[in-house]
Amino acid sequence: MFKIKAPTNFTGEGWGLNFVKGEAKTDNATLAKKLQSKGYKVEVAEESDDSLKFICPVCGREYKSEAALNKHIAKEHPEDNAPEDDETPEDDA
Image 1 (cartoon, one colour):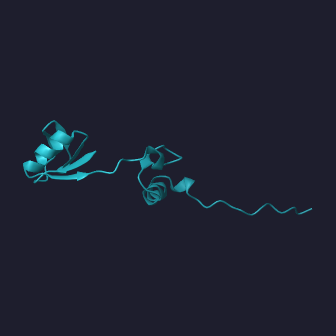
Image 2 (cartoon, helix red, strand yellow; image 1 turned 90 degrees about the horizontal axis):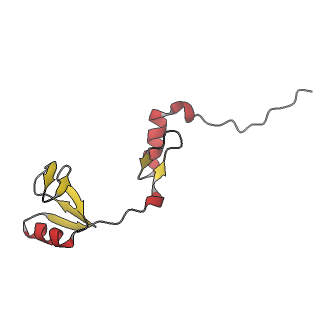
Image 3 (tube, helix red, strand yellow; image 1 turned 30 degrees about the vertical axis):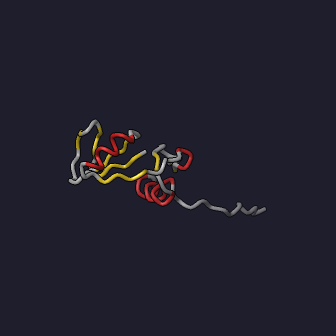
């Protein structure tokens, strides 16, 4: 996988790729080499491991980091983020 960075902060289609804020990804090594010769910055992107996604247990949204997931839960699901009461009920008998 190659990460392509355009010389400008362009969003839209170009070279058969969908650029977002001047960046796109492709598996096409020939295209990556051609774009590099045209002034685009080309990096080898790390493959993402789907097993490393952090998924919200409440709504199912996926996040790349545990910190992002925790921030989402605190903001979007505060009622589900309350600390659990670890105390056991006492018998008054």
